[in-house]
Image (cartoon, rainbow, N blue to C red):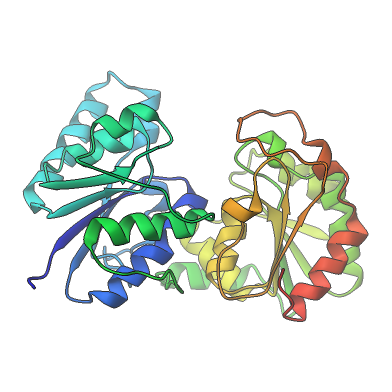
Length: 343
């Protein structure tokens, strides 16, 4: 059988890209001679490829600057960006395109490649997307990693079992991480998430930081930017224990590689830690960990109060169940994760 050219559409976000990777990594292992490219937001491209454009799993990352498209949909820059992406995709003449995102935008991007086979879920996140696919495949498996691998398997006619992933290494990121860590064991806190309902109370993170400092951890608080108020409040209320860091994705990858423990909600850094086999404690509220929990071979403890109700609505109101998870419970789960005990 000739080597095929496969295009993956999974533009973002960070955790979603990481959850798509195990299935794609399985395809790479099963068909090492195939070309596998990916359409991704520039912010998350370092999860797939290094600065030279090459990655351990993906041959090439096509950049879809969706942040620009959303902020200035009618601008000349947006129109040029979309046109250039469409031309690049069509030029490659892919055999199979697989939309692992399931939105109308991702389906339109995939259609721009004009491949003979274009597959997506029968029940995508946005129903209109299904009208654009040529293959509408059933969703199989409970966890999104299993669902993505099954979709890719059916689209490419290759049996796939999602497994470990390898992420690119960045020399500047390695240097950055070395200058921002100490000889103490490192715990990275990730207090923010995609929307407010997924965030554990700031005061709890600050209390947790103080307790971790007492037992000898160097506690860092991940911040998406210097103007992010939540990490700032955690650090301010930690009695000087926690330090804020604001790494880019390449540096964040290298920082997490050095960590002994990562604690946070259903967010990108937690899923990054799981992919890198770093012990994690994941605090879940409105999202279901059976569907979206940490995936990987490491020790991952997931905490979710029985009162939390599954809802994927992007609301800022705090989830009452998350507020019922107390610091001693998190510390106990951290001890289990550090001892290699997973859920």
